[in-house]
Image (cartoon, rainbow over all chains, first blue to last red; front, top):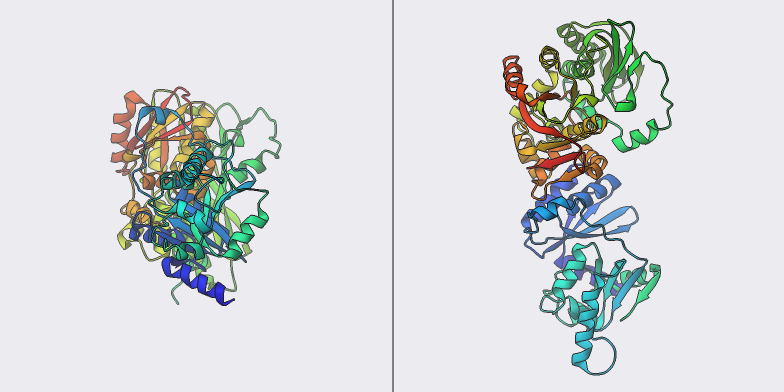
Length: 218
Length: 346
């Protein structure tokens, strides 16, 4: 229990929380938009909502504004974790205009777990190369993973100076949720360097793993 | 005691409509009555039904009612009535008789509010030359008011959703943004000036616009209400089997409606309308997000969208302005079917 409280406080310290419980639309969107304006690119904050309409409208607003987010529900309260992206994602060329639909990324009933920053046993250099190639291949899968979990050395993959940081960020913008072990990021002093996904405790990680259809560990 | 109707509702006016997608699902299960005298029914999602009496005369029938959009009961009565009558004007008809439809919480509001709502409706009806000859009230919370209106129309001069032709220009007769401004008012974010302007526009009958339409023998038009500008244009494009390009930069907006949307004051109805329309709509990649959401802002007693031959657009705009619809503007044009039904451009 103390461990849990400690972790929560750790998360709360780096996460700004916008509580919209009890507010009717459009007040929750106004609060979300205000927080987005005040954030720098890469910053994350949490929005708490207690009604489905607020959740739907906030999600829609974020999607339309190409802002990455993930949603967690806990006894009737939704926590929407929002990460501000770079706003210059507007496409202007004619071909894009003629392709009507924004591609829809479907997700499979599986998650990917990275417990290391290397793939397989053997030469370390090769292991790092392999895992980079693996991560780059994820976006071309027929179905995207439901979620990606990072723990122990795996959290290093999500650091801003990691060679696959941009690839993971891209997956995030395609709607893949990423959960980083909070204890691990603290242990490796990476709290300031993980700018994607959300931090979670072991309970959350266990929960995601327990409810996944398949778990892939490269 | 100062009566404030607005404190009683979360969604006022046409924002209180059932989501359009849900409505279409339900309507699928209703059999359409077959009768050669039915000239217009819900098949084309038109504003009103039209029933032919003889070769010279058809009846336009419509009803509309909703919860308060403003604090003052008299003003609410005026707006609800103007909104109910609007459907007759949008079809090119002349309103003749009407019935009141009122839901009123007798235990929670003083009876003077009851009288004020009906007085507002009655005064607006007089302005339209419409006679209210009866009605029905039940006890209900929150209050809701509107009219069931019958109008006259010549069977060959019906203006419908299905009458837009490629090459036509689309003219809008009132600025948009009432839904956003009302939501902003509830959150104390809207300017008093803008609220007053929204109220003035909602009370403004579409009568003068309809007279101009009749003069120019317009075939296609609709009025902008709960489904928002781009939602109603979509219904028009679908019924007319054409595509429509809307230039959102040319759409006149009420006061600081843009600023309100930019602050995140986006009413829930706008999201519902967007969800309904988006599969049939192509959004320009550089479309301003705030303008996009304004295109779906639910309007109460909004203006007319008139589909008029391109050659006539200047004359019609001039006449609409003379008739007091000073914000009338060309906001887009109609093309042969081209991919999506509606194209929203900047």
